[in-house]
Image (tube, rainbow, N blue to C red; front, side, top):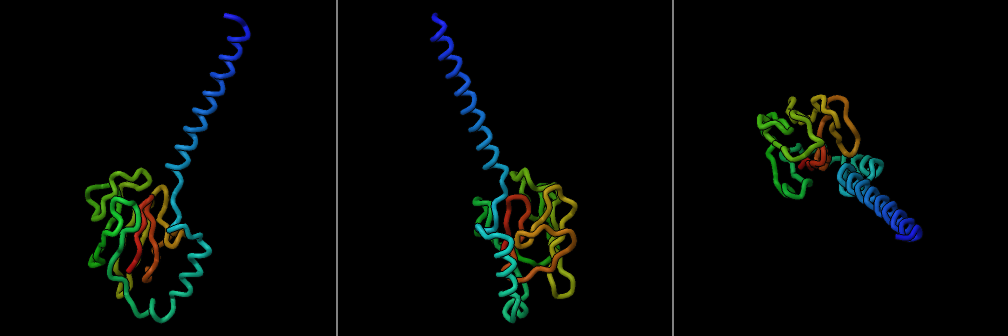
Length: 156
């Protein structure tokens, strides 16, 4: 083989390696990226919450959760009757075993008086309410969005 052909093959091999690594990085980026709540930014969600926190939200007490994500559970409703754990463990009322971003016992929904709260249970990736990470128990209002891993619940 001539030197020119060998050099051409070397360049082609390096080019293919770069394309391969670019594809791997793209796949990792799309899998790891946490989806925003229906494409809304945190600022827009805060504005929506302020508008909805008027009389309608104050009068209506949350009674159920609607699953928005993942697609396999979209449309499922969960009744807010009693304390509810969310996580990968089979001990949880809502088991998200296939979600690598959810801890074994990730979050807890519970009632205190007439209000419902969500609390992060020390998860690695945190729990978000309206796209804002919570560090303490957060009171829930109608139309709030709670995200644990890639699962998104809408409060109704």
